[in-house]
Length: 300
Image (cartoon, rainbow, N blue to C red; front, top):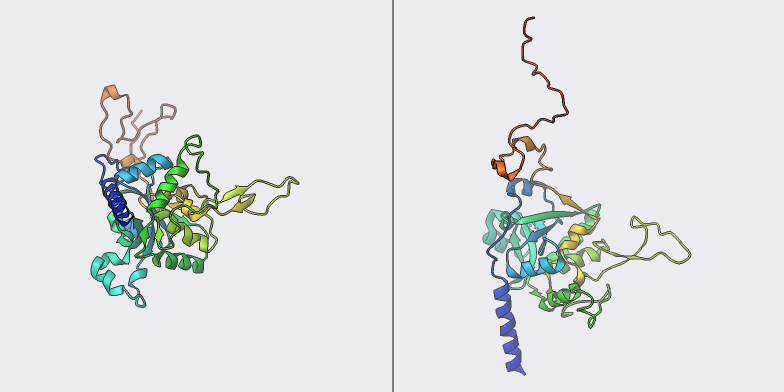
C-alpha cells in the first residue's frame, strides 16, 4: 500500500506543478497604483486575484467568475514586537514586510507574501462593512494562525464537483452545511481559510436565506429572512465579491479623487472602425454653442 500511496502522491504533485504553470495570455484591465493601494487598503481587507496559472483558469471557468484566488491583508501584523518570527519576516521581505497578505497555494501551503507581488495582476479589494474592531482582530489572528498549514487538495476537487451541473453531479449531493475536503484541521484552501475566520465572529459572507414560515411571520434582519451559515469549505473567492456585506474599494481612481476621463490618452481610432474620436472634448449636437468668457465681442 505504501508503494501505491507514494505513486499517487507523486502523480498528484506532478499534476499540481503542471497546473501551476502560467498561461500565455493574460489581459490586464488596469494598471494598479501601488501608492494608492498602500494608502487605502486596511488590515482585514480581502484581496481577490485573477490568477495567471492553469489551475486559476479552471477555477474561473467552474465558478464563472474572474476571481480565482483570495488573500487576507494583515499589513505589518507579523513584524510587531510581540511576534516570534518578527526578525524572519523583516529579513525576508524588508520594507515590504509592512504590507503583507496571508494566502494559501497548492504548492506552498499557507504563507505570508508581500502585497506588492500582485501589482501587475487584476485584483479587487473587499472590505467587511461595519465589523467591530475586536472582531476584526480576531479574524486577522485566526488567519495568521494558519501559517505553515498544508493546502487541502481534496477541498478543491469537492468544490469542482459541487459546481458541476446537477445532471452531471447527482451522485454527490451537498448540503450548505456539509464540510468539503479532507476534514483535516491542518489543511485549508485560500478562500475557506478566510471564510472560517469571519465565521468565528459570525460575520456573514454569503449566507443561505431560510424561506419564510407558512404563517407569514417576518424576520427582523437586513436580509428579511432567517439565515443558514454556509460551511466555510464551500466558500469561493467570488463570494466575497458577491457578498452584500463587503464593500468594494476602488483604490486606483475613485478613492484617489477626481476622475478626469476627458484627459485619458486614447489611441486614435481608424475611420472604418466606427468608434468615437476620444481625446478631445466631445460636444453634444443638442447643446447650444457657448462663447468663451475671454472672447471679446465684435463691434457692430
